[in-house]
Amino acid sequence: MATGSSLEQVVARASGLMLADRTVDGVLRLLTSTAVQAVPSAYGAGITLVGDDGVSTTAAGTDRLVEGADALQYDLAEGPCLTAWLTRRVVRVDDAAAERRWPRWAAALVELGLHAVLSAPVVAGDAALGAIKLYSPDAGAFTDHDETTLGLFAAQTALLVAGARSSRQAARLGADVQALLARRDALQQAIGIVMGRDRLTEQAALGHLASIAERERVSVHDIASRTLTEHARRVGVRQ
Image 1 (cartoon, one colour):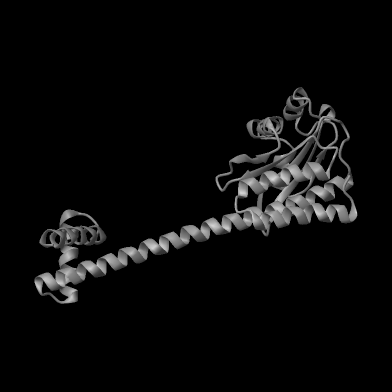
Image 2 (cartoon, one colour; image 1 turned 180 degrees about the vertical axis):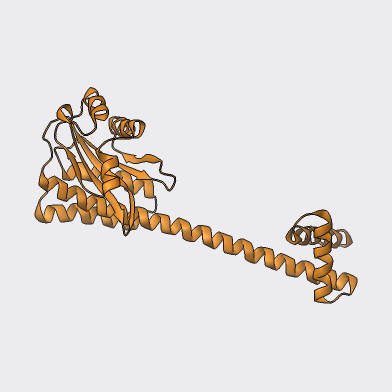
């Protein structure tokens, strides 16, 4: 079992690889496999993420048995992983055969050959993002020390997932801004073409484009784009 400085080395290793690897899914898989190494009594590990729509998915799992055990919780809408996410507390199941909090899930888990589960919430700031969990076929497999260990991995997962979501949001915002700037530039170019072609002022040229857009029931940006295309064709023909 990882203790003291060895535990810190495991977490540092995961953190360092997160910074080096841009593939979020790959790093999440790394975290699950490293968590199993840090808690030898664990058979497998998985990370559940809950989307804005409330849908839970296994973002990373060490094998199909873990993914199947996770799916039980999603299908039955009960279990320690979902409870850890909802309550933002570590949840431990020592023996699913004797578990009474989630009877349907517990019975189904035993059928899979698993008995012990340890789940820690993945929380970033005020946002609960999901949970990371360990499974074992042995009853009583996990200890208080294992709870602390898994909590460290949950913190690493939260940093990674929150950072990735922020990056995606920034990328989407950047793309929206670029699109707006492109539309603005296209409109300005179209206005310039109309001014030169029809000898109009800038305001009159914009009014001309706007009147066409209103008549055809499309946006002025659509008319601007069409104006640029037609102008490019005329220039090409002359050349």
